[in-house]
Length: 237
Image (cartoon, rainbow, N blue to C red; front, side, top):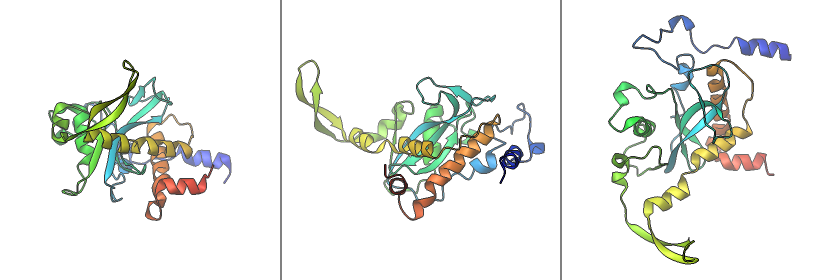
């Protein structure tokens, strides 16, 4: 296909009928209306693994959109924030695009605030009574969320800068599990960077769409082999 032909087709991609879009003042207004037919499906059809983590990712975007945010600490400082629910293997099982106050639906909102609501939203479809372990960092944490995580404490060796020697310190079991299993979203983000579709677009929903295509590309081999093993086979260096 010729490049001009490809660009013309790419410029006409629409994922929903704009005639059905309501104004911001309407009670049924959806900030993700233009991408909702794709977002609502997510990746829930893949059976989840035991150790899961919840963290944020940034979809690079510098166009005009109320969803665009600036985060100086991220490799891509301008973009659209997405909360991702991923396994230790790097496979993403669910996600939620951050749109501000309406990120979670009214029936999903609790007294935990938006951070706690996002955690509950992303784990709501996990099978019950199967002993899943879910890890998240301090932005999501609150007393009400972690009160049920109290476990026995074990002792570990840590270097003391003041005493200049190793000392024994108490460590909750949850901390050890966190350190071993929290990196799932970071691993998935790294895989996404390897295959990112870097077409420039002023339409925010197209950047989200490209991101979902890369998500799917990374996770396509999951039925045959874990995503990380597939990456090693194709990128041995």
